[in-house]
Structure formats: structure tokens, C-alpha cells
Image (cartoon, rainbow, N blue to C red; front, side, top):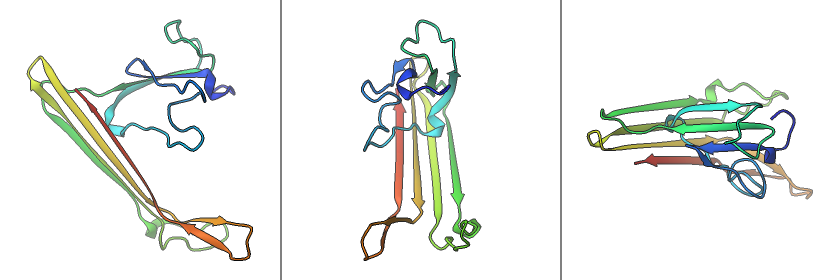
Length: 161
């Protein structure tokens, strides 16, 4: 943010520090680590401050991201979504090669929240899955050619009581 390194930014989720103390930036996503993501439906609101963060934020000169998660209420509520990137809608790459035969993405998720005990105790949960099937070609400096790496899958779950 603002041309600064990620260690100069600050990330909080529900007011709790979510920074990697060694690498900077969010927890996860460092070298050889998977980044940690929240399901889309678990985020109620977010605030991003580029500069001028208050003293409560601390340790930031680049920017501050505050994420607030959903919570249950006295009424049951839920949501769901499905997003599809169909291989039939994929255009050829920059070299004119047809890559539509195995290029697809299916992303879906759902959430449910409500009361456990009215006006006292609530629950909320959300889950999301992202199925990606995009062939990646990895080239080695060997005369044997290249290897195609299989599909990637990303799952995210979040719950709050």
C-alpha cells in the first residue's frame, strides 16, 4: 500500500491482530504457505484506511484493513451462491492455442445464522469451496519436455458463536 512493504501494513479481524510477525502482511501467504481467506459470506463489512490511522491501530505507516465478520441474530437467515467459469466461454490464449478443453472454475458457498437462545446466544457459520481446473505447464531444463500440474482446490470455513 502506498509503495511500502507489507510489514508496514496492519490487518485486524474483529479487532484482533492478524499480522504475521516475521514476514509482515496477513498470517499465511508467506513463503511456502497458503494464504488464509474468509468465505465471502462471512464478511459483514470491511474498512480500509490508506493513511492517518489512529493510535489504537499501531504499527502501520502503509495502511490498515479492518474486517468485521457476520454474527447470528434473533432470526434465522442464510445465503448461498454459485459462480461458474465454464471452459466453453474461455477464449484462446495470446498465441492462439485453444485452452478451453480443461479450463474451468466452480466456486460455491453458503451461510446460516440464527438464535440458539433468543436475545442471549446466537450462531453463524459459513463455508466456501473453489474448484479450479486450469492446467499449468511447468518446464524443466531437461530434454524430456514439460509436466502438467493437476488441478487446485481451495476450501474455506468460518464459524462464530
